[in-house]
Image (cartoon, rainbow, N blue to C red; front, top):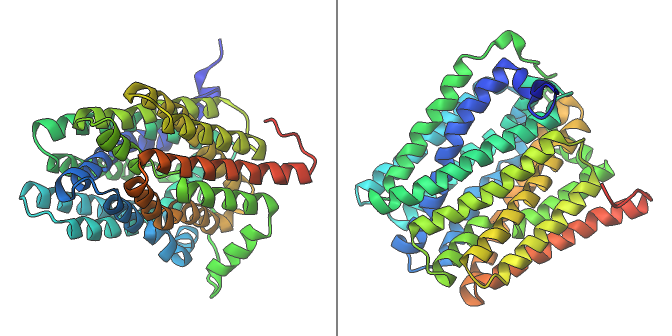
Length: 408
């Protein structure tokens, strides 16, 4: 019988990675609760089902990924990653608590959500490249693809729980309590990291201090055809395709007229599909452009099915397909970009990855929200589908030019 520690779950043989996974499971559940609660707050209490306002919130939340791009990756390459992660996690926890207190006190206004979304996004912009490259410090390069996939499994498993619990909390005790729980949940990560065995961390080579750190990272990534193609794909999908909060909330509220519980359930079903995709990736071989092309194409198909869904449960099934495909893309790009990048450049390259994928929402989310408002939520899904199909063609173009097989 195959030992699971040498197969799908082999990265969990690392003590530090086990602690990290346990803490992240709690914290990510809180993040899922806040996402659903924030969408519901904006759509149903602070506006009259205004998808454009929700798009602005998303745009502000992800704008720091682009604004601070010259510094976030450099910080990941130069500073102590464990200490930096503890700082960013604590900061985001404080902002979540502030949102919860304002909401429970009845003092919350739309501009408060805008400001806190930007501040929380600023912490996340610094956190994301460090969190992704820190995985390699915990498990090493050999198990990096497996650890990335298990990280995603943990994240999406918590996303099955968080949104569903948020729906119940909103209905029973109020929106603000979901924000408070998220703020407190960051303590789980902080406690887990305080018990790390520091001697077991595989500290990466730190970057030398230069005045052209970001430009050097950009030139490095753009000089490699695979990384260049991945960045273009991530821009297309991130800008127009990863706007799941807008897709789900507008379809739930404006098309299916769902209550808070049914709304939260849709996000949980999306996560079910994502967990399936992550577990498949954890047990599979190293990804390549062919698998990314397939993932982007299936994601476009999932959005197409969601756009034509005649009822709530048909839409939910399409979300599950979309979730699995989205994980193929995100995990694949994560592993490929880290494994093909020099260790001293990883922070900057991963900051580029996050900045392009999530920062693109700064442009795309308001546009997608506007399309949902004026043409209907189904048309916003059509925009996402088109972007995913275009991204798949980018990978196909590179593979055809290199005369490589199109099937992973």
